[in-house]
Image 1: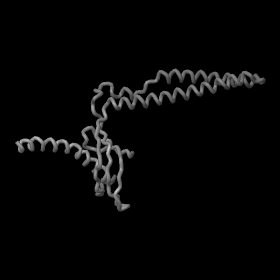
Image 2: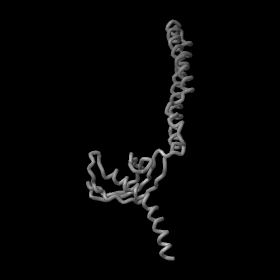
Image 3: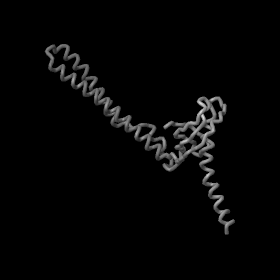
Image 4: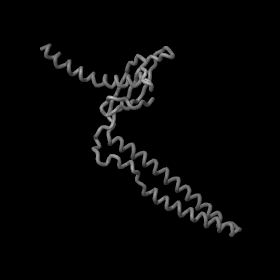
Length: 182
């Protein structure tokens, strides 16, 4: 019975440990190799690692938020320009020197029409990059993110340091693409 229990438990423990250790190996390789391909042993020890998927749905959500922010800024800027021009026109209508005022008003009214057409275009604007994933399944995995806390030996300072960082890995977890310090 004891042998059977060990035979069942050993593969489960091995499988559960191997996936995070694969991510750890990829991250260690990324951290210890510089741009020229030279490796430095930093004696990295992981204190915690949390790996999760980045799906197409996540990407769409990020792109949608970015687009909404961009669109709101654009509309706000155009509305500010329209408001300034309208104030200038009203100001010039009250001036005594009507020759100069009429010239300025006619110029600003043309600019006002231009800004109003830009405003209608901005309000109807749909970014092309939002259609990037139209034909794909929203649960498809684009990448993996590994939220890590690790310690390493800094060879320049001759001391051990701790760092928290977010690593962006390929969808299969075989390559580290980027590190974002937290």
